[in-house]
Each structure stands twice: as structure tokens, then as C-alpha cells.
Length: 561
Image (cartoon, rainbow, N blue to C red; front, top):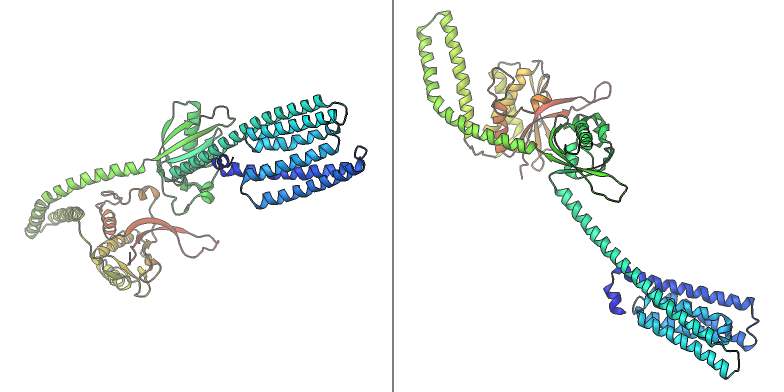
């Protein structure tokens, strides 16, 4: 029995001990009922028999209480405790059985209680052995009463009781064994299901593809972190796909798939951060409204045969990274081609520029002068483009020494205003003291900021303070800093923002489309990041709302990183 208990799970062993405790509680109830029976009807218990009956019942009650305390305090040697309790039960019930006159008293039914408990909690051999002892005791008592005491024979009645006890023990033991096996199977299945659920959660949380579980009506039931990021959902967001306008393409594709299961794959573009309905369940909603997700969507039904639940799984694959990778390969090939072309163009371009200068000395007519100026301007533009391409093709190693922003930006702003003949108040610096230092190559940062200022002065109104250059973040060596360049122009639309840093993309007829791309590459080369972001301005307007505006943001690496 000990080996049997050890082979069971902890839950099953606890079930055995709880069953033994329940047996003790039942024993107390039986003892109380026997004492109550003595106080109500004593006609069959006269004289010394009545006194012995009371003493045995009282002893039975005390033993029951003692066994209950022992079982609750000492959870060791289960079989020894069980056999001790059953032996006491059989002995005391036998005393009551003899004192009440044998089988005619009706107390033989009390044997069923300890024998059934033994059949449930002990091996079948012990239970049958105990039932056999009880049957032999009852037959011996009946035979003694018939032969010695010359009483009416109760052999048949005693034999029937013994046979019934043996049959009951056999049936109860088999049923208990089956229930214990079912409990063990359920416990093992529960452990396996728990482990499988943990594995599923781990796999889903680390998957790069999104997984969304929806019901038949399009109600979102669950989703992994990748899907929440792609669709702009909060971790516990549960809603109908049709209720979010930004997710209308996904809801429409889901309806089409349910109408025609062959349409299991679709390509969608979703902009969840433009949907005001998702503002309360979307992470960083206000800062990401210009973003879009290009998704490959695949639908699959959940096989739930026999269950009154219908679920479908939507697999989401973000193809934006694949598109970006293809674009990077395309740009790399184009970069190598343009770099080789630039080397070949540079010398003829210099010859054209030199010839234009010589012609300007001999041709003084207004028409000739205007034509030569057009040639010179276009030569300068092509030469600048060639220089930018060659600079991109070279892997320049930065000299990332600590750089004090206050003095650097003040000197740069003064030079910029002087070069472009601008009024002193147009560029407003908000850098603070000289304690703000960053890790950035000075020549690279100069080129980046000048590029941003050139873009700003092109669209700014020209009023005092129309261009702001300010630092956001903590001060000192332990904190990261952001440098913002903002103008009061109309701002950049989300459509242009999507292609802003692509090479050769420009909205100006005089631009080359390489300035911002070169600026971002220089920032990356210095472990910094350049981006165009929509941020809320500090302070509130007269109506209590906050206005958001676009600006270029350089996020510097931490000096100690």
C-alpha cells in the first residue's frame, strides 16, 4: 500500500487522506446516533446489557474523535492508521453486536461502514480478508446461540449478511480502483495540458508572425504580442473587427473568406493608429498615427468537432520587413552602380566647369552670360550630387569624442545666419548651459544640422523664432538627449513622411534627394538616430487642447554606452 501511495500523484495522495478524514467524521456521527438510539429505545437492552452498550458507544465516540485528530495531525503510515481504525471499528461493532443479541438486533448493518471504507482505501486482499473474518464471526455467533444457548437459529441470516458483505467489498473495491485510475488519468492529463499551454504561450509570445483568434461573428478573442503590435491593440483588447474602421480591410477579408473558404490568403495595408476608436486600446497611439502595416493574412478554421464553439485563427505576417529588405538590396546595387558612374562623371564634369569659366571671359553678351550661368549652376548641382554619392560610398569612421552642444550649436547657428544673410532672431536656440554633452563626431553633426536647417529655412515663415533648435531629455553624462529641429512651416504629410529618407526622393526641383538620406546615414554611423516625428508641443492652447507638430529629432547615444 505504501508503494501504491508513493506511485500516485500528490493530488491523489491528498484524496486518500481526505477520504480517511471523512471516514473519521462518519464514525463520529455513527457513534452519536448509537448513543441517541440508547436514550430513545432500551427495550432490547436490559440491565448490564444496557450499561455495556452505553460504555461501548462512549468508547467508540472517544476513539472516533482521537482518530480524527491523529489523521489531521500525522500524515504518515497511511496503511497502519487505516488498519488500526478498521480493527477498532470491527471490535467495537462486534461487542455491540453480541450485546444486542446477534443478528436479530439489526446491528449487523454497521459492519458495512468499516468494510466499505477498507474496500475503498486498501487493497482488495485486505478488504476481502476483513469481510471474511466478519462473516465467520457472525456465523460462529449464530452457531453458538443455536447450540449452547438453545436460541432460534440465525445461521441463514448470518450467512446472507456475510455473503452480502463479501459482494459489497468486491464491488466497492473495483469501483474505487476505477475512480482512482480516472483521477490519476485526469491529473496526468491536467499536467500535460498545463505544460502544453505554457509551451503554447511561450511560442506565441516569441513568434514574429501575428496570431489572432476570432469567433464566427468577427469578435477578437485572443492575440499574441506580435499581432497586438501589428494591429495597434492593447494586451487585453477584445472587440469586434467591424467596430474599428482602421481594421475594415481585415474584417472585409474575414467576411470574404467565410463566404468563400478558398480565399484563405490576402494582402492588406492597415493603419491602426489613424483610428480614433482605437485610441484607448492602442499603445503609443498619438506618436504612431502615420505608420502603416503591410500584412499577408491567412485564415484557418479551428477543428472543434463535438464542441458548440466556432473559432477561427488569423495568421498575420508583416511583409514590411521583406519589402524593406528588397528595397535595401535594390539601393545597395544602385549605390554601387551610381558610385562607379560618379567616378567616371567627375573628370568630364570638371572639364565642363573649367570650359564654362573660360567662355565667360570671352563672351560678355547678356544672352551668353545667362546661358553660361545656367550651365554653371547645373554643373555645380551635378558636382554636389557626385560628392554626395562618393561620400555615401565611403565608410567614414567617426571620431566620437564628447561634444558640448551649447557652444557647438551657437557657433553653427551664427555661421548659418551669416551664410544665408538671415535676421539674427529667425533661429532660436534652446540648449541651456554647457553641461549637455553628446558622443558624436563634430564634422558629421555639423553636416547633419546644416542639412536640417537648410530644409527648415526653405519652408519657414521667416518670422523671429520661426526655426527652433532645442534639446529634450536629461542633462549630464548619464542621460540620453534628443536634438529637435522644428520650423513653423506646413509640416510634412504622412505620405511624404513614408519616403522621406529614401535616396533620390525629393519634393523640390532644386534638391538632389540625398541630403536627408546622407544625414540619417551619418547619424547611424555615430550610433544615433534621425527621424521625423509628430510630437505634442509643450503647454496647452486656449481651448485646453494640445497641438501636435512635426519636427526632425536626433536621438543621441548615451555618452557612457
